[in-house]
Length: 271
Ligand code: SAM
Image (tube, rainbow, N blue to C red; front, top):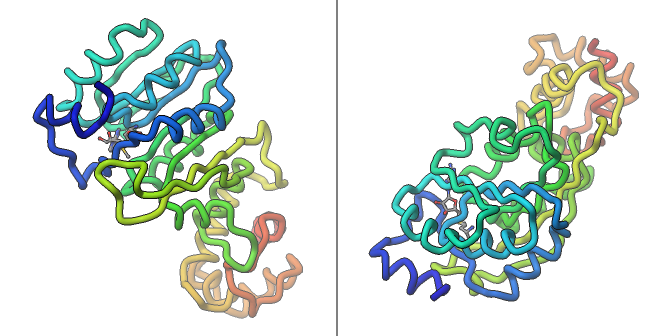
């Protein structure tokens, strides 16, 4: 019995929209996600939100260790019954955003594979990427619109795009139709792969200094950079324009057009 609808009915659990509970029930999609993740027998995988355990089971058959963190304790009896046969799976019932991921995974390299609860996608990305030790790879099912933002190019960048591309290379590996989930979500989904860099790909004094500048640049949507940067950093627009010019960036441009290298140059000028 692996169909999430039947399984949940059996345990008298009604999916909660507020927890982003759309369960993957298509075996092909589950297999494809595991293939995209290129899991090796020695790998440690962190799964966020195992739900009914469908993806967890596929991961358990391929990885050395699977650590699955689920916030909804109603799922505990179901998950323990389904995954009890796998001695390489550790289940933890907690909010991922309140969890010290590095303590959980130990000192070994690890990857993250998850069909994310869409309401906290950005918060989870920050929680995982802003750690001093990051997953080597993240294979994440997200809302397609968010996937497009993660892989966006200059002209279409957002604070989320810059944040993710600062830490790694992102690509869309597959799109998923709402029909592969139960209950069906209102939006299309996509599987994104983020391969993190060992070292930052750009030269900045610190990630804090970089993000201070980038956040200031994006602080006022659709405004020219000199205005947004000035307000964000508490400078006059003239002073901000001077900094931008020294970094080789036209002060009239908008934040969504700026490349990572240009943000880095600006960070170095701001000091
Ligand atoms: N992995 C399952 C699948 O593919 O069918 C379920 C995916 S469902 C989109 C998201 C899961 O994340 C749900 O099981 C939900 O309860 C869980 N979840 C929601 N918020 C969470 C949080 N803050 N921490 C951990 N799990 C969370």
